[in-house]
Image (cartoon, rainbow, N blue to C red; front, side, top):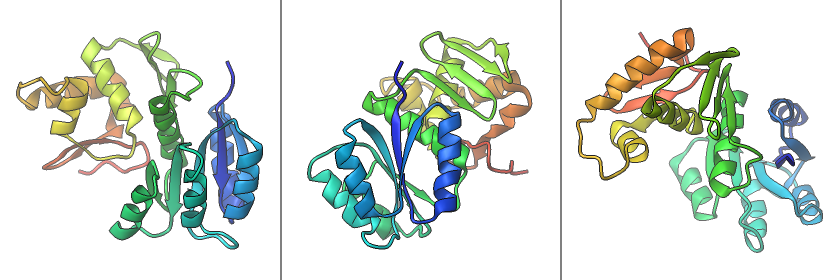
Length: 229
């Protein structure tokens, strides 16, 4: 099966190398560019680019202008990286057609997880396998393993874990989880999620701590975050 091609665009070579190393280890082919103008040249010469990770602040041509140019001819998924986290920046990005917006500093593992999730949504993922911090999930075979050891999950526990991993690093409300995992026509008590999360955490062992409780909201799957006491 062919590898998905990801282009990393950032004027900081160390940042490009960091992201490239994690993507390569996860089975992606990676192209690099140091600014927006260089990215456009590479993009137009490589029609097989499946996703772009794009920094905002760059010399020659910044991320915003690069997105505008790409969106004139392509709907390729784009993840924007920025050192700023202002709401207006996010709104500008989404208005230009950005698929995801991630603020620096970020967890490379979470970034790779977001790349996989977006490629699956866009139909460009190389396969249905996801692995984050030792938790491996295969949607096609419907199996899960932790550090190489199989874990038996019920159907809903598997779907819940898959949803968490597809949305790694994102705070998810109980209502959103119900709508996505149990479907929007489910009118049951949202506490059923808490019950399933408790069982899922137990079956994942120490890695169950990656599922963080967001008090008053819901949950977030994030291996890079310290568990709140």
